[in-house]
Image 1 (cartoon, rainbow, N blue to C red):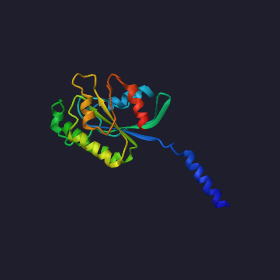
Image 2: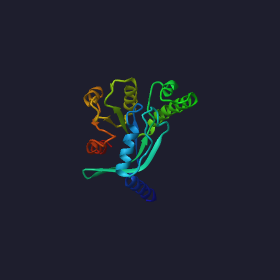
Image 3: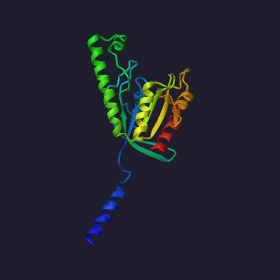
Image 4: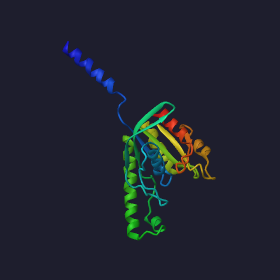
Length: 209
């Protein structure tokens, strides 16, 4: 009888707390696609504060950044998650690229070293993600080695994905190209900088998670 009661209460408490785990929502993509700008927009909308620093120089974000307990709402539904902003993934980091932005050689080499470590950390963190938003610059060719590598890794892990076609405020933006490149996923066109189309973005995010 005692064993039966134990099994009952174990089952009861497992069901009681099922679904209470905090979802880890990761932002992935190449450098300067707008991941941190998007993270800041989400945090401003729901927490009233920024998440990280943005810069026109690639690899501004070189360490994993986490903002906990964000709850978004859309059409009577809500989703709570820990937001994870990851360093931009690149196939190559060359310190000489930073010299072009006026950095001294020592600073440029250190930044390249930190950026490389950040890329490795981003890939490692994929195993901890429950859901991923892939942020792609809609003004660039989506068929890049980096984008294909990121999507391939996510597919291999069966992680739910929402693709964001960012920078649709720019004339050269082409959401349809991204949809054609990755037809297996929902693509939402936004401008993280100006907050364009965020109602649809939040709605799709809640549906997916």
